[in-house]
Image 1 (cartoon, rainbow, N blue to C red):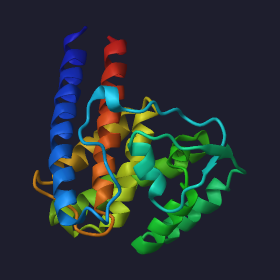
Image 2: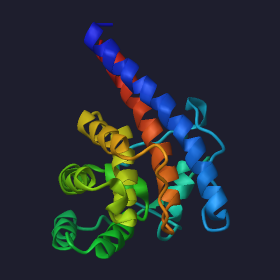
Image 3: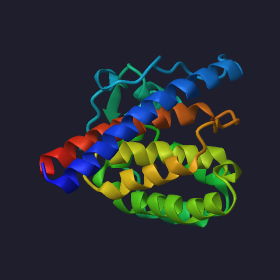
Length: 223
Protein backbone atom coordinates (compact mmCIF):
# COMPACT_ATOMS: atom_id res chain seq x y z
CA UNK A 1 0.00 0.00 0.00
CA UNK A 2 1.38 3.43 -0.94
CA UNK A 3 2.38 5.83 1.80
CA UNK A 4 -0.44 8.29 1.00
CA UNK A 5 -3.07 5.57 1.24
CA UNK A 6 -1.50 4.20 4.41
CA UNK A 7 -1.70 7.60 6.07
CA UNK A 8 -5.36 8.08 5.10
CA UNK A 9 -6.33 4.55 6.13
CA UNK A 10 -4.51 4.89 9.45
CA UNK A 11 -6.27 8.21 10.12
CA UNK A 12 -9.67 6.67 9.40
CA UNK A 13 -8.96 3.70 11.65
CA UNK A 14 -7.79 6.00 14.42
CA UNK A 15 -10.92 8.11 14.11
CA UNK A 16 -13.04 4.94 14.15
CA UNK A 17 -11.56 3.97 17.53
CA UNK A 18 -12.12 7.49 18.84
CA UNK A 19 -15.76 7.53 17.70
CA UNK A 20 -16.42 4.14 19.30
CA UNK A 21 -14.99 5.38 22.60
CA UNK A 22 -16.95 8.61 22.42
CA UNK A 23 -20.14 6.68 21.70
CA UNK A 24 -19.79 4.94 25.06
CA UNK A 25 -19.51 8.31 26.84
CA UNK A 26 -22.44 9.78 24.92
CA UNK A 27 -24.61 6.73 25.53
CA UNK A 28 -23.92 6.92 29.28
CA UNK A 29 -24.67 10.65 29.29
CA UNK A 30 -27.97 10.15 27.48
CA UNK A 31 -29.04 7.38 29.83
CA UNK A 32 -28.20 9.51 32.87
CA UNK A 33 -30.07 12.46 31.41
CA UNK A 34 -33.35 10.56 31.00
CA UNK A 35 -33.32 6.94 29.87
CA UNK A 36 -37.11 6.97 29.43
CA UNK A 37 -37.01 9.61 26.70
CA UNK A 38 -34.48 8.03 24.36
CA UNK A 39 -34.68 4.82 22.33
CA UNK A 40 -32.29 2.00 23.26
CA UNK A 41 -28.86 2.19 21.64
CA UNK A 42 -26.25 -0.59 21.36
CA UNK A 43 -24.10 -0.96 24.45
CA UNK A 44 -20.91 -0.59 22.42
CA UNK A 45 -19.67 -0.24 18.85
CA UNK A 46 -17.47 -2.64 16.96
CA UNK A 47 -17.26 -3.73 13.35
CA UNK A 48 -19.12 -7.00 13.94
CA UNK A 49 -22.19 -5.21 15.35
CA UNK A 50 -22.93 -3.13 12.24
CA UNK A 51 -25.85 -4.22 10.15
CA UNK A 52 -25.22 -4.34 6.42
CA UNK A 53 -26.87 -1.40 4.68
CA UNK A 54 -27.57 -1.38 0.96
CA UNK A 55 -28.29 1.46 -1.43
CA UNK A 56 -31.96 1.17 -2.46
CA UNK A 57 -32.87 0.51 -6.09
CA UNK A 58 -36.45 1.68 -5.50
CA UNK A 59 -38.10 4.20 -3.18
CA UNK A 60 -38.74 2.57 0.18
CA UNK A 61 -41.54 3.02 2.67
CA UNK A 62 -41.76 1.57 6.16
CA UNK A 63 -44.07 1.34 9.13
CA UNK A 64 -42.26 3.96 11.18
CA UNK A 65 -43.07 7.62 11.63
CA UNK A 66 -40.75 10.46 12.48
CA UNK A 67 -37.39 9.43 13.89
CA UNK A 68 -38.14 5.85 14.91
CA UNK A 69 -36.61 4.44 11.72
CA UNK A 70 -33.26 6.10 12.49
CA UNK A 71 -33.07 4.43 15.90
CA UNK A 72 -34.05 1.06 14.47
CA UNK A 73 -31.61 1.30 11.56
CA UNK A 74 -28.79 2.26 13.92
CA UNK A 75 -29.56 -0.66 16.21
CA UNK A 76 -29.52 -4.39 15.65
CA UNK A 77 -32.98 -4.72 14.13
CA UNK A 78 -33.85 -4.47 10.46
CA UNK A 79 -36.62 -2.40 8.94
CA UNK A 80 -39.37 -4.07 6.96
CA UNK A 81 -39.79 -2.01 3.81
CA UNK A 82 -42.08 -1.90 0.82
CA UNK A 83 -41.71 -0.19 -2.55
CA UNK A 84 -43.46 3.17 -2.77
CA UNK A 85 -44.00 5.83 -5.47
CA UNK A 86 -41.04 8.16 -5.51
CA UNK A 87 -41.83 11.78 -4.56
CA UNK A 88 -40.59 14.56 -6.83
CA UNK A 89 -37.04 15.54 -5.90
CA UNK A 90 -36.99 18.92 -7.68
CA UNK A 91 -40.08 20.15 -5.84
CA UNK A 92 -38.64 18.96 -2.54
CA UNK A 93 -35.33 20.70 -3.11
CA UNK A 94 -37.14 23.97 -3.80
CA UNK A 95 -39.11 23.58 -0.55
CA UNK A 96 -35.95 22.78 1.38
CA UNK A 97 -34.14 25.83 0.03
CA UNK A 98 -37.15 28.03 0.76
CA UNK A 99 -36.98 26.89 4.40
CA UNK A 100 -33.31 27.90 4.78
CA UNK A 101 -34.14 30.20 7.71
CA UNK A 102 -36.87 27.97 9.15
CA UNK A 103 -35.07 25.05 10.85
CA UNK A 104 -38.28 23.56 12.26
CA UNK A 105 -39.74 23.38 8.76
CA UNK A 106 -36.54 21.86 7.40
CA UNK A 107 -36.71 19.12 10.02
CA UNK A 108 -40.35 18.44 9.14
CA UNK A 109 -39.55 18.27 5.43
CA UNK A 110 -36.59 15.92 5.91
CA UNK A 111 -38.45 13.60 8.25
CA UNK A 112 -41.40 13.41 5.88
CA UNK A 113 -39.28 12.61 2.83
CA UNK A 114 -36.86 10.25 4.56
CA UNK A 115 -39.41 8.25 6.45
CA UNK A 116 -37.10 5.40 5.43
CA UNK A 117 -33.59 6.84 5.98
CA UNK A 118 -31.91 4.71 3.30
CA UNK A 119 -33.75 6.69 0.64
CA UNK A 120 -31.15 9.44 1.12
CA UNK A 121 -28.72 7.25 -0.85
CA UNK A 122 -31.01 6.82 -3.88
CA UNK A 123 -29.73 8.22 -7.19
CA UNK A 124 -32.64 10.66 -7.30
CA UNK A 125 -31.37 12.38 -4.14
CA UNK A 126 -28.00 13.51 -5.55
CA UNK A 127 -28.84 17.24 -5.66
CA UNK A 128 -30.52 17.09 -2.27
CA UNK A 129 -27.40 15.49 -0.78
CA UNK A 130 -25.31 18.23 -2.36
CA UNK A 131 -27.55 20.82 -0.72
CA UNK A 132 -27.29 19.16 2.71
CA UNK A 133 -23.53 18.89 2.33
CA UNK A 134 -23.29 22.56 1.41
CA UNK A 135 -25.44 23.63 4.35
CA UNK A 136 -23.30 21.56 6.70
CA UNK A 137 -19.97 22.82 5.40
CA UNK A 138 -20.89 26.47 4.76
CA UNK A 139 -23.67 27.81 7.00
CA UNK A 140 -23.33 25.38 9.93
CA UNK A 141 -19.55 25.28 9.79
CA UNK A 142 -19.22 29.07 9.73
CA UNK A 143 -21.54 29.54 12.70
CA UNK A 144 -19.85 26.78 14.69
CA UNK A 145 -16.40 28.23 14.01
CA UNK A 146 -17.55 31.75 14.83
CA UNK A 147 -19.31 30.76 18.05
CA UNK A 148 -19.63 27.06 18.88
CA UNK A 149 -21.46 23.97 17.70
CA UNK A 150 -23.75 24.36 20.71
CA UNK A 151 -25.44 27.43 19.17
CA UNK A 152 -26.69 25.48 16.14
CA UNK A 153 -30.28 24.30 16.09
CA UNK A 154 -29.85 20.74 17.34
CA UNK A 155 -32.68 18.89 15.54
CA UNK A 156 -31.66 20.27 12.12
CA UNK A 157 -27.94 19.68 12.68
CA UNK A 158 -28.30 16.17 14.08
CA UNK A 159 -30.75 15.08 11.41
CA UNK A 160 -28.42 16.32 8.65
CA UNK A 161 -25.47 14.54 10.27
CA UNK A 162 -27.38 11.26 10.41
CA UNK A 163 -28.45 11.50 6.78
CA UNK A 164 -24.99 12.50 5.53
CA UNK A 165 -23.40 9.66 7.53
CA UNK A 166 -25.79 7.14 5.96
CA UNK A 167 -25.07 8.59 2.53
CA UNK A 168 -21.31 8.43 3.19
CA UNK A 169 -21.42 4.72 3.98
CA UNK A 170 -23.30 3.97 0.75
CA UNK A 171 -21.22 5.92 -1.77
CA UNK A 172 -17.58 6.37 -2.75
CA UNK A 173 -17.58 10.18 -2.59
CA UNK A 174 -15.08 11.05 0.15
CA UNK A 175 -16.41 14.60 0.50
CA UNK A 176 -19.11 13.23 2.77
CA UNK A 177 -16.74 11.56 5.22
CA UNK A 178 -14.53 14.67 5.09
CA UNK A 179 -17.51 16.83 6.12
CA UNK A 180 -18.38 14.48 8.96
CA UNK A 181 -14.76 14.51 10.14
CA UNK A 182 -14.70 18.29 10.16
CA UNK A 183 -17.96 18.74 12.07
CA UNK A 184 -16.95 16.02 14.52
CA UNK A 185 -13.72 17.88 15.22
CA UNK A 186 -15.70 21.05 15.92
CA UNK A 187 -17.68 19.33 18.66
CA UNK A 188 -15.93 19.41 22.05
CA UNK A 189 -15.25 15.94 23.55
CA UNK A 190 -17.70 16.65 26.38
CA UNK A 191 -20.45 18.08 24.16
CA UNK A 192 -23.83 16.43 24.65
CA UNK A 193 -27.01 17.79 23.01
CA UNK A 194 -29.77 18.73 25.43
CA UNK A 195 -32.95 18.70 23.32
CA UNK A 196 -35.45 15.88 22.93
CA UNK A 197 -33.52 14.98 19.78
CA UNK A 198 -30.27 14.48 21.73
CA UNK A 199 -30.25 10.73 21.10
CA UNK A 200 -29.72 11.48 17.40
CA UNK A 201 -26.14 12.27 18.35
CA UNK A 202 -25.82 8.65 19.45
CA UNK A 203 -27.27 7.29 16.20
CA UNK A 204 -25.05 9.68 14.26
CA UNK A 205 -21.96 8.24 15.94
CA UNK A 206 -23.13 4.74 14.94
CA UNK A 207 -23.63 5.71 11.29
CA UNK A 208 -20.41 7.74 11.33
CA UNK A 209 -18.39 4.82 12.68
CA UNK A 210 -19.84 2.60 9.97
CA UNK A 211 -18.98 5.17 7.30
CA UNK A 212 -15.40 5.33 8.60
CA UNK A 213 -15.14 1.56 8.36
CA UNK A 214 -16.52 1.52 4.80
CA UNK A 215 -14.26 4.38 3.68
CA UNK A 216 -11.13 2.79 5.16
CA UNK A 217 -11.89 -0.38 3.22
CA UNK A 218 -12.35 1.66 0.03
CA UNK A 219 -9.01 3.43 0.58
CA UNK A 220 -7.22 0.11 1.09
CA UNK A 221 -8.64 -1.22 -2.18
CA UNK A 222 -7.29 1.85 -4.01
CA UNK A 223 -3.73 0.95 -3.12
